[in-house]
Image (cartoon, rainbow, N blue to C red; front, side, top):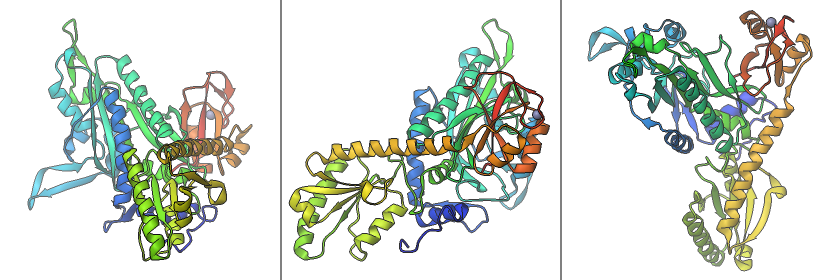
Length: 479
Ligand SMILES: [Zn+2]
């Protein structure tokens, strides 16, 4: 498996991605077209993402619950924009237990409707607010063009749904969760992201405002990696989520929703991977350190394995995720390639000479060849390894940031924009008219990614029509 070279990123990025997903054993194709099987290594990566996010959700006052997979069709129809947006993607169950159902059931594409229904029941007074619930689960959207992790019929995610007494609180919550996603992406995924607002045509169906974290992949295309939505009172009105305020007046609640999915695995692959395979950020890697013993004779094996066992125990005790590759049927060189393909951040090699010198050889995944190699004493190894993992995490973020910034430019005119989006992102004044947005999309395939918050509003000329523009937007081809 590890002896055949991957297609190079430069030659065919899409094919490179497909091969990595399979050969690193992250996921496989399911018998139903467009569905995926997440394999144990891919799921372990997702579990680490879940843990890092779940901790942040709890720290910001949220609790987890579980809502049903099936939603009555009539629920979907209650919010007009929501049903229009999701109708083409719905999977609908019409038969149950061999009988035609009185009302068709939708397999949830997202849960605003069913959760809205329940919130209407649970919320009566301002004292019941805010409600801050998250659920981990799977959803189904009948996508036509699919790609493992990036777009599949069924995928795994978390969806947060909150209800608040005031608009201000709901808007704050929307942005708080955007910050949580950005913090997660940067500090756990080592993925620099740009935060901002989606345009009216790119926002979530039924939302007043959608905000997003946008990341640049290794081919410069943009990946929407997590979104948070201010739903206004749209769902509260559709589902009668009402409460008596402090002066005993009946009010509609203000709601939000926010989600991040297994798509983020795709973001990690495409941000950090190279022609040798996956490169995982240490904080998310299922295996942070792999130990490869190097020995030929029986006498060597005994001495080497004794040291390997000791080092393994020490690193495990230090809380690191470490694995010993003691396979006898393959060579050390094969093992090196194999773990490089799987993106393990750090490899420890231990041979007879290392045993003698009371040292080990360390090889960093992010720096191939001699540059990434160092020899460190066995004494105090755990702290040296921990430090190196911290360095790798930081180096991955720095490298991705440099790459991203080198591929963002501010074109002077529309013809320059057309050039820029072939291999990068354009940051440009935009009049915010859907016509200009549609024109760019049609002529370049680039879409508006987000209107960043951290810009000073000013006055410029729309890059497309030349009319007055107040804010700038990122245009990029996306996944
Ligand atoms: Zn314009």
